Image (cartoon, rainbow over all chains, first blue to last red; front, side, top):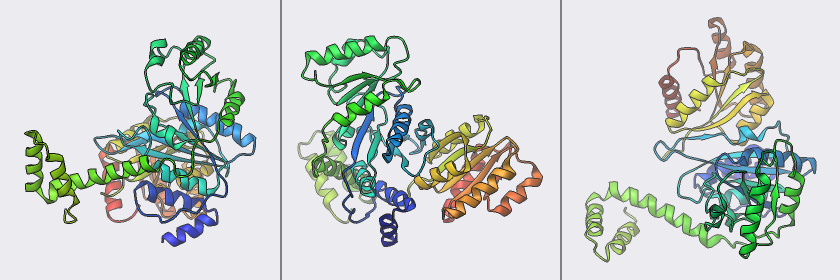
Length: 298
Length: 134
């Protein structure tokens, strides 16, 4: 079945791409991804919920299609930690109708993975291999410290909005410093200029005085072209396999978590002994647990 | 662990009543499914694109406009043309009794009318997926 999918993929069949993305997102083996026809520009769009990430991406799609560029969007939305369910509503805001040059995929995102879906690295490589000019990754919208998205992308765009906190907010670590481009969205609202000036002032104190700060409005489309120009002016950050250690570590964490959960069922006695050791503060409790998890019988 | 069902929920045509479909979206989410909400005023073509790109198992259409006998056949036809005949189709909304058998004959898996409980929809999807069919 996998062979048939790859055949379809090479023939540029979108269904094959969609299917392979599902398999990869689930952690199933998809064998090797063909090297891309060209490097895509991978743009991460991050910012708090309600700041307008999906809406702005919708506008960017139109802008890019106007330039004849093809666009794939990987839109991450949160997944319930209780039911595992997710309401994926990003594409709804990306307007449309879209043509063959646009591919949008919604991805449920468990908590604790840095605001992006699991195996996002692999998913990006898949759409890149399919040959899109631009790949836009929309983060969940945690707003602070979306570093995972930054590491996987060439350019990280942080969206802010007017009246979204005072200048102390910008001093917090991880908010501004992960951004390559900062856009004050909803710039048709009052206060946008002031917000942009505050951000500018904060950046000038630090080492980020080169980071562009722009105002953009999805409502009036003002500033859209300038925003894309600023994104295009950024050097492509992704090097060959530069993010592999982080991604590998994340895979390891997932595998360990899965085994940990399995061991609780398959080896209840060993498991509760390990737990007891951990509770009483025994120094080698973790090492012993690792030994248990390394057992292939677990 | 089986992967969660992916279902696209959409309103096709000129129909602005989205309260019902949003309640259903919430219920399916709470039942552990991944719900892709495509929203209002979708064309049949746009719905097919969404189902394809999202690799959905199911498509739920909500129609309260009375245009179901025009739009649903079109959606089903386009699904087949796009080689997506394995995607199950559900219809909800205001559908006259007499039209239900016609829709089922087209290949719609189930029609949920007014008064349907949320549990009924969830149960139906769970049973069908356990039986191996989306």
